[in-house]
Length: 349
Image 1 (tube, helix red, strand yellow):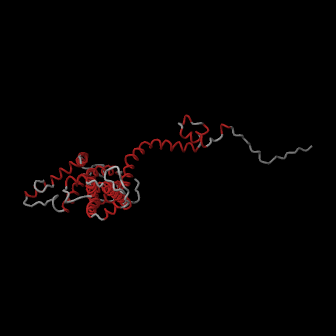
Image 2: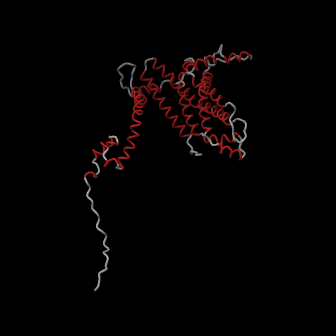
């Protein structure tokens, strides 16, 4: 008797399972409703779907940012949009604003007073950040690394560095109007502190604010730098304090002095902070409205924001808003140029 021992090598039949109505993917309407519902009210057939988890993550982010973005759009973006619209009109403060196209910008192009004020503003935007940031980095480096070498430390700050930071930062807590009034008295031709000191040594002091335009520009640069250098001292001190001490120890072992250490180690590692400060200070210098308006006579020196204010004062609201639009474009262009020039490989440590 023979027995058939052949094995059936054919693949097993595929199992076919019928989907129950509860396991079917939700239709689009149900899926959209589930995204809007809290997770506890979401059907299980949708809650564990990969698409729902992705949308749920972005729903949380959108819900968290919705209110701040709404306030930002209402109080920041909306005024910009309105200003751009009114810059193309002849609005004079009344309920009627007729669309006139680029007439305001054409008038601005042919206005010599605008170009004079713009020249002063651009000069301040170029010179003031360089002067202020250089002083801020110098003082910050002296505070954090200018002390005597202590035992077991590669670098050490000067004694009382926290007190110096407070002293440098003090102008930041003062009102800009107060700063302008005080410095206006300092630069006063007849009774000012500077000319009074020069008179005691037999030198006739110049008319800082009432005569030559270049002297008035120098005075404004001094006040701008004095007002903001303390902010950058604190900012750069914090950035320098975050640099690991091991890097300084390695530089000192290689024989680098303080100058070489600053330019080869400190400056590259805080460059992102310097670039951010450069942009911020440039925008502040482009403004410089209160300092020039309070401290300097109108016939001597005028920056573009002061020229804009005078147009508002004269009732030329449409023309004034077109000047504001130009300032906005200049600020954005300045920021992009600084970011482009200051772009370099990021250093990780």
